[in-house]
Length: 93
Length: 153
Length: 118
Image (cartoon, rainbow over all chains, first blue to last red; front, side, top):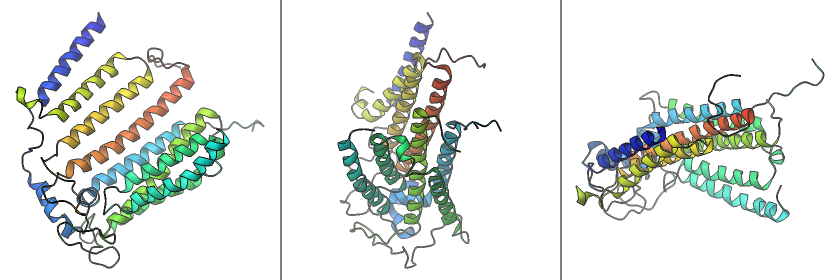
């Protein structure tokens, strides 16, 4: 009984997701933005980089990369903290 | 530990994998790539060594102390490069125009030049070192916990 | 609305991936299958982010020997890079918790480790 109610509500959720996706703009013709056009035209003079994606990740939005490096550091510390067994001393000290 | 043929092939292949990973990290400003992608390539090479050899054998070459020092120095270098241009703004690119990494490429399509980019290649190197040390320490700790019982420190 | 289905195909694939992963997370009891469902949902979200910035007939946003024409938007690609790294870190933490649970209770069933005691 509980499984039937769960499956029906998940099917309703799937229907809402598919119906919502069909109302977005057609694929390949997005609405024009000012930020991306400015970045494509002026990234070579201001940062001196041929790769526009690398200059966005490290120069125009470098603060997000700093936060992501902190998340990576915290996750590695958390994993090395959980998988740790202390040695027991044999001579009862 | 697997058979002798697998161990010999893994010993020969690790050289080419590390060279390819360093190439992807170093050419981050000319071709697609960068710090995170090159670090993932080198970590996959370390996982191949972990499958071919035993985890207890690999612990003698990659000590935990040197991995911890490498990761901390990568994070500190990234933060120091961010604070270097504090005179104007927080993440200011202060090496454009100076002869270290500061050529400005001509606008439009051009064959690539490595000595461009300002602060970005040094940041790529710092993030690459951090990713390699962190993810290989995680994989080594998981393999050691499942096989034996002793993990130091 | 029916003529927009052949045009919106990448968005439809991303929405189907997210919907199928909802089924997996709610209805399965094995712990490893739960983690695989979360990984599939992360893949669906990254695909949706990258497909949002495509321009018809565009090239990759890199100026090294690029053929003439318009360029694709570079900002959603930068956001997807951050999202992939964050999902790797969270999945590593989840897998260590599963290793500890298996060592403590001896089974991978999520019904046997529901009560918090001991």
